[in-house]
Image (cartoon, rainbow, N blue to C red):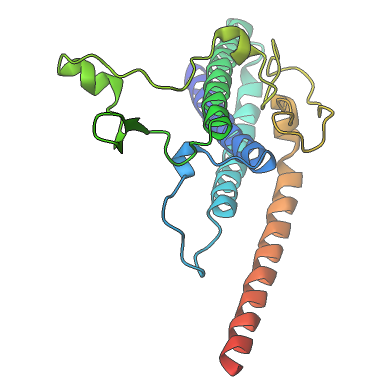
Length: 240
């Protein structure tokens, strides 16, 4: 029984991380921000595939696979419900998952605030650079950890440090004191930047397996139509 609980918790955590990657990507697209990890200074070739779409599709496939495995383990665990210690282990597992979910949520919020500051200060592609007054040119900022290892004083970034009150008040992805088990709602504000979806509950994520599978099929159909359209355009250009 304990081995099943450990496996269940491990898969649930993986599924949780996959869901957050999907949710983060969708919300960045909605507010028209580019995550630092996806920022490229070189323009991609015309015929390259849509990176955002491929990333979302990859995580959705992983989430669907994990959901199936989780459901199988849940069925196996049902046979142990009458055993002593079952409820205590189940409660402890839920608490640990909620703690991890809070850590992931806070990390995503802080990264969003960081990227939001980049856009506000118009330094989206130069966030790791600063203008040297001595040399009169842009130079890369050495990471603080590397500077400290060499015994040098770290340079102070011009990006303002955000306090915890502001981090907790961010409306991106979650709201203040929002727990994983709360209901999923949509805030008012349309496409206004910073006002997007709240957290989706664990139960709703599990119930949405079939719906996500249908969405994945729809996405594949749209992708195929896009490819066919691109081929037609290329053929027309060659004829001209």
